[in-house]
Image (cartoon, rainbow, N blue to C red; front, side, top):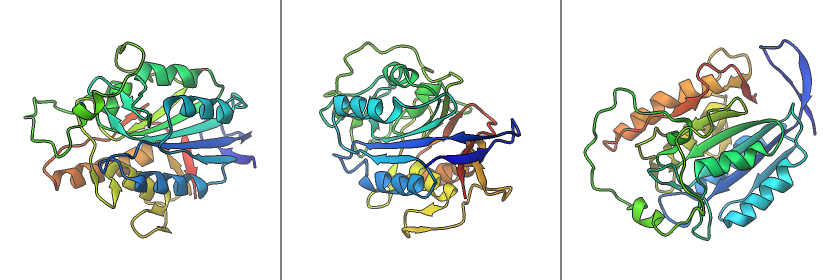
Length: 266
């Protein structure tokens, strides 16, 4: 059903349909199905009109499902798209189970066909490319020995279109949370899930490790609403700290900055 959300910005109440699509390409251990489970719970715990779990599907199946889910969207609606998969240094999003992927440009173009806002939560390596966010105080990092050669894995993927510039989702239609910056990998722990997804879930009030509802950790002003900025500010230091435990760096990135847009309610 419809839900009425209150936006502090407008002060007006309006009826908004919210829909969520949860995607994952989990054929390798580096991308855990736990991510999909966690985010399906996150969205199901909200009063959304539709939550669709759709992991390990081909690119064409994903495009068709987006059409089915988002075609009825109106300008006042908010649509959520979560993706967990491998990512390429050029911003490739390797979400297709048939070894096909989206370029950032392609994904943005598909979503722009539909009315309403899109909240995009992207947990893959180099995910910040889509919003053109680089590391703070970037220094040339030494290439450590990777536990999983995702570039070799991605070499088998085809996007079917040429890669375009970075920052394809720098557009007022999108609210974007990325697990990492451009030039930076995203990490996961076997059997636990990806770091960013874990803290995004906990921020909204779902503990994926204990499989239970908790109070929403990102609701710092305790008003029962979680904004994009609150979820970013909550997850950023925790992901950074968790990555440092395995001697890596991972900076959650966000667009737009300081957004008071309400993503979730208690």
